[in-house]
Amino acid sequence: MEQPTQLDRWRRRAARGYIELGMPEEAERELAEMSPGGRLNEEAIILRLHLAQHWHDWQQAAALSEMLVQRHPANVEWRILLAYSVRRSESLAAARQVLVKALENHAREAILHFNLSCYACVAGDLSQARHFLREAIRLDKKYAKVAKTDEDLLPLHGEVKAITKQAKTLALPPPPYLMALPDEK
Image 1 (cartoon, one colour):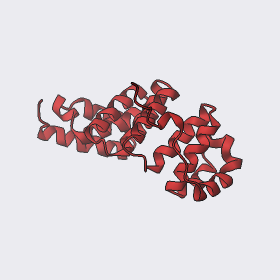
Image 2 (cartoon, one colour):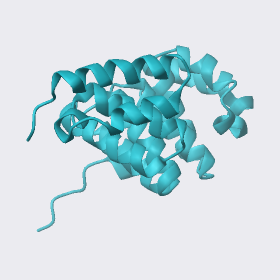
Image 3 (cartoon, one colour):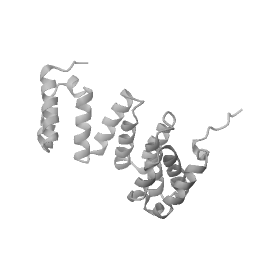
């Protein structure tokens, strides 16, 4: 693989500046002129992801997010962005699967539970939405406040106070689809 050149580094800085100035077309041109190795530089991938989101190119955003997930599996932010992009480029069900898979290694990340609550609510599965919201609030109480205004959780807005109270008092088992299946013999 070709290494980034000095010109690639300059183009990356220029693209970042153009993005900060609200000039996405110019940023896109700078990134397009980079060498193949330069385009695979992590900062260049992040800049390209930012532009893909700006243009609502969700397939490209998903591909770039997946690259970042592969490079940094411990970084939950990239998984959230991957799910967000997959929700828009594929389906809500596919996005939920991205987050469920992320829970395997990041079960204590409240933001994953909160996003799964949102996705379950949008899908009409209010029981699962309540479960994930309770867990998100149990892990990080700020999600009680966020839940009161999140549009995806509109059907649960009247229940947030009760869910918050439950989160403080209950140790909840994982939903059945997250529990390990018994070994088949």
